Length: 248
Image 1 (cartoon, helix red, strand yellow):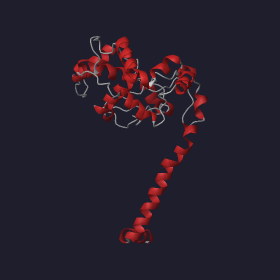
Image 2: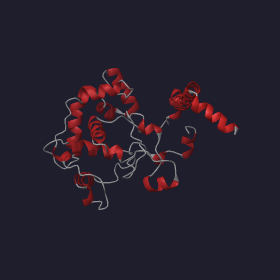
Image 3: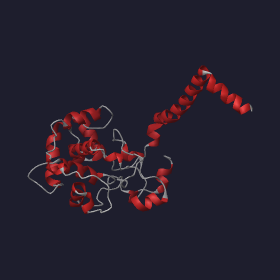
Image 4: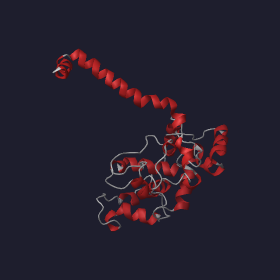
């Protein structure tokens, strides 16, 4: 009786309901926002994680544009069944340069957090062009236009500058370049130099030949380059479980 009376007060009094709603939202907000002030203590300190190269970045843009995230997550949960199927659970550090991150929760298709290097470039091209030719039970749509559509990379520098404002360490000065050399090595630092973004994109596409056609750079080149880097930056054979416990 008393419980029903208290509940009735909330339902029949707009002011009380509003105050209660605001209190509930405030508590929920604090739970989500407060940890962000401790972000340096929650992102693991692991070697190997770097920003995407210009080609990988354009591939990620295409991945988002085509809605791949609607059916594929990029976050392996810390459960035994997930680790047996996909590999080591995902680290926050692996997504620290993702804006926005692609963790997701919908798995119409498998998780892609560790898909890099799992299949050949040729497999990815065939799978994206005609999924059921390699996975008969697949419900994934065909994406044949990726193979014939030239990649537009005219604005790749602007895209990198936009991400730079969020904290991604793409360089615009010699000082920033040297910081990247120290943090990632010279080869990677060159790829993160905004002033040479288009040249770096072309060079990676030509050397990688991701779509199997060296006559042009297609959207398929970029998307496959992105898929092939997912989950490959951290060498988990060099990490002990106890090294990660303090970040949980």
